[in-house]
Image 1 (cartoon, rainbow, N blue to C red):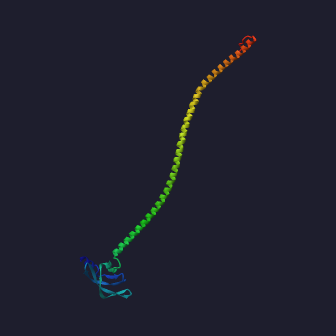
Image 2 (cartoon, one colour):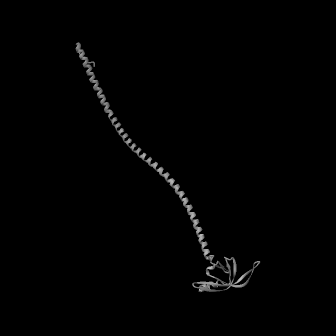
Image 3 (cartoon, rainbow, N blue to C red):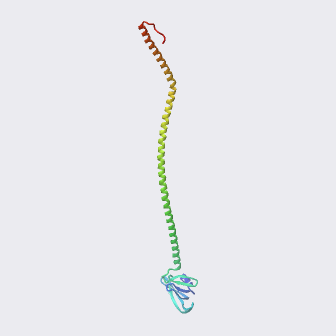
Length: 217
């Protein structure tokens, strides 16, 4: 009850404006609080306001207006704004406005993140293409490396064969002197044997003719 009395005191000496009717209902001069069950109501005692035109107004007869706290949209220094339960309180409107701003911020953030995601997708696609190209180049290098290893093995074998050929040549060169000596010996032997054979033939011929042996050969 103390809370309702405190709120009631804030409603005295203020104009009452109805948003649903779109007019000033009156000026509050006094207020009472009425309780029904668990709900309390404000009984506003007001002087009605009459518009005389040219911006002039006068107070006329008094009237009473029964409202619930839910009917109040906002209470200002000089004005009470009523919504008759059809307009949410100003705090709720402000809260809804804040929620709307938060929603708009979230939407903006979401759009920015979606844009970033698209950019990342494009970057990922570009990097994937580069990776595929690098993998193709890597496969080429692997084939070239395999060919190089095969060529290297062939060169090693050829170097071994070449070294063997060099050793054989050195062996032949070492044997050349022996071959020349053998050749000279063979030629000398052939010459001696040939001389003996010729001399034997001539001597046989001379003997057959009754001539002396010759020693000219």
